[in-house]
Amino acid sequence: MKGYRQVASAIREMKIRGAPLIGVAAAYALALTAFHSKAETKGDLIKEIEESAGFLKETRPTAVNLFWAIDRITNKARKTIGTAKDVTKVVVDEANKMADEDVEANRKMGAYGSTLLNDGDVILTHCNAGSLATVDYGTALGVVRVAWEQGKKIRVIATETRPKLQGARLTAYELQREGIPVTLIADSMVGYVMQERRVNKVIVGADRIVRDAVINKIGTFGIAVLSHEHEIPFYVAAPTSTFDSTHSASEVVIEQRDPEEVTHFGTQQIAPNGVKAFNPAFDITPMRYVRAIICETGILSPKDFERRANRNHKTKKDLRRDG
Image (cartoon, rainbow, N blue to C red; front, side):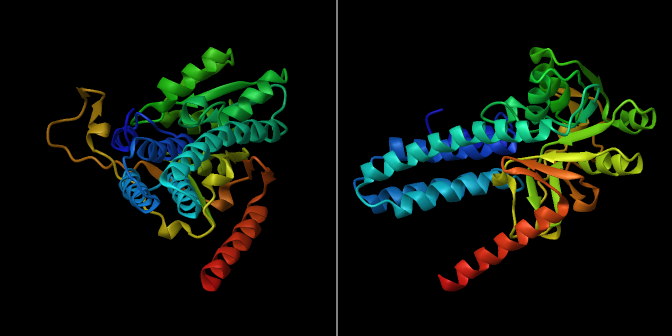
């Protein structure tokens, strides 16, 4: 890709997807802006980067990693002392650093999360939170991969994840490639497999974790409620870049996607002409259904997360007041 508009299009069309990967892709989009810029002054280059940042922020409204990455790059650029060339180097280096950090974070959360998995566990996962949704290794699937590499005999049940079928197309592929036993089910089968005790743990990723809830792929909330009903631990694996301590669930904008994703399988129409369809990309799982959050700094209980979020929120408010 040669420019930020191409990256933005890929994010909007979900050719690039997965919250951590979206964030790093946006960082590289700004690096492309800086690299290809003809600006002669630092000020002109900063203006170009900020314009690109505004365009990228319009691509998808829910995954917080997108905004985190864009703000991190633009703030780094603004604080750079020197010429336009110096800014370009700083932006490119920062994007590379963020990519490396993502891989390291995934491996760390995999190591922490693997302690929650035992020999013989059957783990249900929803959507795709593996290497194809990150720079490499994965979040929820990273936990599974580390446990498998440790020699634990585990199995995975993957939901198909309508309407885009990330579970069927991507998660099943990743697990099969790693040699990890996987069984694919339709989304509507989750209650049945839990009732039949065919699964004993759930691990999902997240697109945003606010003070009181987890926002993840549509269908996650239903799985969390079913897990609670059947007393099955429900874990969330996500890097700290997905944490959003400044918002609560009621303030999050849920992305609404093209209804044709529901009325069609790819290009094949499956619903009657003219029928209306509703297509929110994400749903909201209240924190009371979450057993623990796995991140690169450790395993957080909902209470631990709440304390951390409140502390960070207070710090940001103090900084804004002092600034």
